[in-house]
Length: 180
Image 1: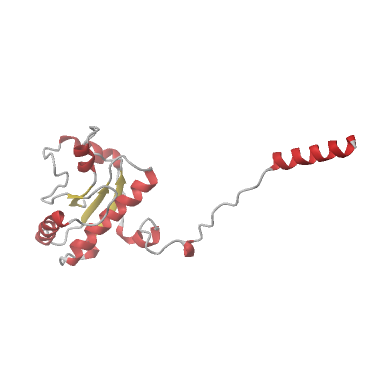
Image 2 (image 1 turned 45 degrees about the vertical axis):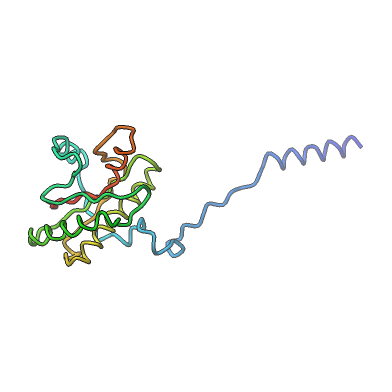
């Protein structure tokens, strides 16, 4: 009887110590939603590489409080956790599209930005979606999509660092500039 109890106790202990193994999620590209903008195949031709250290230094002397775009463009602002163009920003899209037509064949860089809420990965993907939304809206206004490139800074390029709602709102934006 003691041997049977010892055997069952040992068996139960072994089962508890081994536990259940977890299977890693299947991230097969075909199973990922085709509407996921963070999928690199959707944006491969639309992105540019930049030197983020150099960019940060250039932007330190910005004089406009609510427009971090340059070259005559206006920043497009987004609601919290959104990447659709709000009705309030449609006029700015029209202005930016007109400016894009004025500059001729120059390439335009659209930079998606986020506030500090969310993970780095989430904010990077959200920044790409915001930049793509602006690109699509400008293309609908007649700007050649081949002239526009998109990039996401996620939360790494804030224009404001105060812990206020107004400041967070200023960081949820897409900036436009001529690509050099």
